[in-house]
Length: 496
Ligand code: NAD
Image 1 (cartoon, helix red, strand yellow):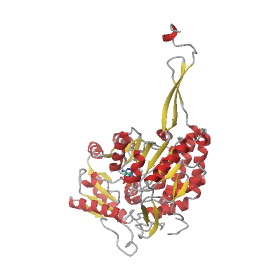
Image 2 (cartoon, rainbow, N blue to C red):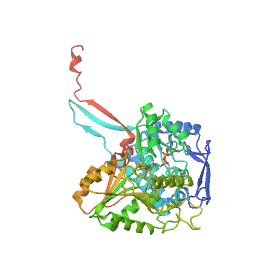
Image 3 (cartoon, rainbow, N blue to C red):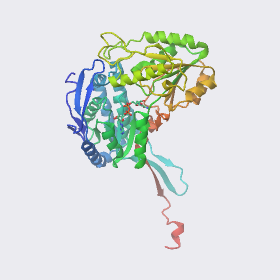
């Protein structure tokens, strides 16, 4: 690995670069297994130190007394700093995760946009004067929570990190960031740009380490006033249980098994492109991957044939090649898990229409590649349609009418996202309002805007990120009543 890119082996704790005192974490390049870096992870003492420094920093008048537009200045600077170093961040992220450079660059720029948006939202955020029911002013105001934490997964690190760090800081908090051990390097790049932007020391620390050790300490520590978690549903449930023990608010962005729907009247080229992008971009390692495809029966055979043919033309390749559409999976163990899902689907009677194997050839032999896979012949209650694969594996199913479609789409534990392809907009609207998912895309898929809230229903999570209210999710609401009469309360008057 280019040492100019991973130039140090220290963590950013309490505003200083320190050697982690926890277990080593190794990052390898998924395209060929070569070694990126070995990093000493955070220990429990490191977590405690980060919390101590964060408490000092968040209570320091130099931060606490800043007016919103002054606090926003730091976020604007972080946004600029990320944009300035986007190439470097992108390179590190691609080495760490195996994602294509074009995707990681977009993620870096999206992180920059998140800081900019949250700065602007902070500057324009208003408290509320509520209608009084007496001779007083009544107000609803929002205040920082204190020391908070973000726990993030490996699949889109810089973007999911920014979605937690930016609103947390905008809200006036300190934040500890615990990234996944599978992608430990990107958070250090975020720490560098935050340091470059001059954020007061202690407000941000990054603590890569095992979830069961570092993550658990963060969640259970009494000084942590909120955890925003993105990751798997089982982990999210565990965190929610622990948070309940100390009555701490949590936001949970969890897994998905999102339905994509193609009606017979759809623009079929647009639908094929959207379906492929929805499931095979990011090599399917996306919470919102459109992994269950429902196609209206009258066009089912023709549409699936067109989709299979187009899927076979996708370029599986090296993350640094500009033409690559499907890059390697994050690591060998994860590819084993994807393969296990496909084996189970075959055992359940599924018919693999394309893929279902590793690509062959010298270009692929050392990387964790897997071919885009389409499987037919399984019902909506099959394991493939119930379990999140988190890889490039699509289940295709026919549907007969709107009632059948809504029933099947919603008959799933998850409720993160969905996609609809049709030229009939009243129908699209009707279906969109009937789908039990946090996001619905119509004639598109996997499009995001920081100004539009995001989150799931059912096992896909609790709470929303992004949007103007994204900052308030990191604040404590307070009601203030201010008497205007300047007269003693009539109840006590006789006693005066
Ligand atoms: P994961 O749940 O294994 O890990 C996520 C994070 O939680 C990691 O940092 C991990 O170290 C930490 N963690 C693990 N156990 C912990 C514990 N007991 N206490 C505290 N922290 C702990 O998930 P993953 O494999 O990293 O990511 C993939 C999952 O994330 C998929 O299910 C995917 O759908 C989901 N995801 C959801 C969204 C969303 O916005 N809804 C976005 C991306 C990924």
